[in-house]
Image 1: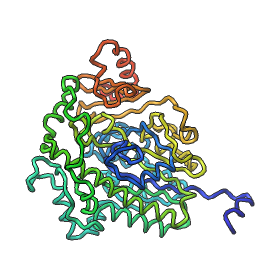
Image 2: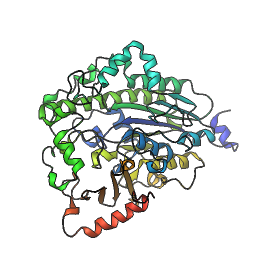
Image 3: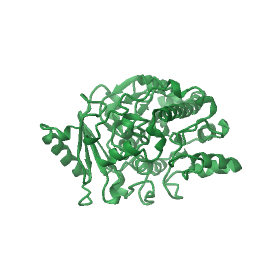
Image 4: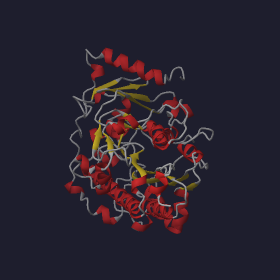
Length: 455
């Protein structure tokens, strides 16, 4: 019986599938559709034009493991004591995969999960980096040497500045993830599916396939407008040290090497976009597009030289901010942009509402469905992030309205008016007239988590 006929006879419409496309370390507005002159992202641009896009979205922790924990559980990382990349996800905390499986979905994570353990965390089909290494066989040595953090190849720090990869393009993680994701879509069963297709790039190693590397000549790359302009006396020691030393890649203190890194970052991004495009094309080819929710996000951003900073680990916009877009057939209007402050901790409850899942009311995230239905309405909300709290120090951030406040343990506070100062160059916490705003936001932040009390 045709689906339309079944519906007329009172049968429920088919449940929506979910395809979650995810990258690692994609700064929030490094997209062609956002006017970034270096970004070559035609597939993400097309998805953005068909989606509701959140212009002010944030991760909950600017480092991989705790950020992914929050995304997958709807809880802040401190709820699971997932302080950093060395802390595994607690096996007794349900993930989004558990909730979808309980509702009858086929669940799969193909690519990077980064839970720091051997648990499937609710996914019935799980392919991760270890499976890619099995596929590579002896060629895994090439990737390990490119990722090598010992400095054997002459690099001055643990992270290489960047160059074209020696690994054949078809063997890159992104190619493998895309192929396996397509295989999964083609071999899907009768159940609706929840598929996470998760890529490493643009994260290091900053070594894209040659086809992409040659499209980004470093000599044509301009340094960020804020390069060398940050007043270090107005920022905490953590930021000062990162600018002065660039500890992961000391070579980046000079402009020539910085241009190479920027070029290879964007080449990495283009390669990830290219492979995600093949997955989206398969979705259309199989006739699944009209009944599949597609969302794209990254686990955190990358400073890419902004203010002389690199990688993540900061509470500045390009580190803690992320791209976030939803295409929901029958609900979202293509090309819509939403100014409501959003957080990745809200993804799980959003998908739960869209797909009719039962999830606990105690989750830290709240559904974004009202924003998807009315993106033009800026709904009052806040976004919280933390970093390094388990070591007895660290920092916390809250974004509410136009202001961002950062509490740095035993160091100066930071306060920025993002409407008037989107590049975050003027720390209002050091200026008279802003003490009340800083006090109010600190109080709001500590209601979420007070590191001195553990609550």
